[in-house]
Image (tube, rainbow, N blue to C red; front, side, top):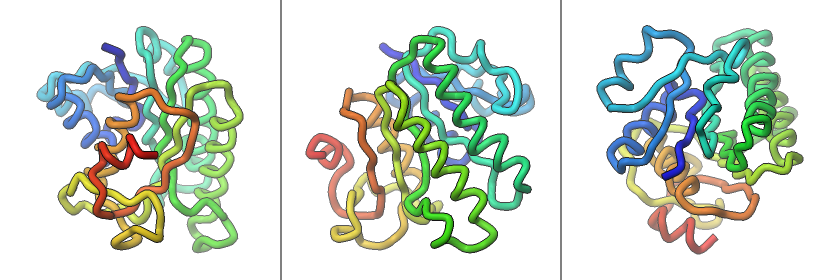
Length: 210
């Protein structure tokens, strides 16, 4: 079975993804910033490796067949961290995947990437995400970009909508985003973007029909 490197594994979607992958027996490697974060993944039986989006991370990619990028600097950080993580870190991850011969790359992005349409405090983040998405999509990798709506901590329903026309709301649970990422990584797919919102279509059905 192929092994997925999870960048941003200690984040809210990353942890959920690793829990679901472990439950399904899907091999993953969690990239963490420091050893203090390893206990959670050790308990799951998930392999972990220390790597830094703003520093050394080359070794983390060795032996993996796919990458899930779900890292983010967070809304409370400064512009410097936004540039280093959400923009430069994401671009470096694409480059490292290419150098390691990894073809499959799934990026968790955001539904709205027009900086001028977003709140002023989020505009640098949206600029970074837009540029990072474009960098991935212009690569020769087998990419998928996931564009979730407003994230919630509600339990996953296992059902989604891939368009606003069929959506129940502008939200989606982090559980369901993780489930979609796992489903996408489990099946080869043409390069494309997915809008992800709460809906009524089972995830497996939505992915197979798209």
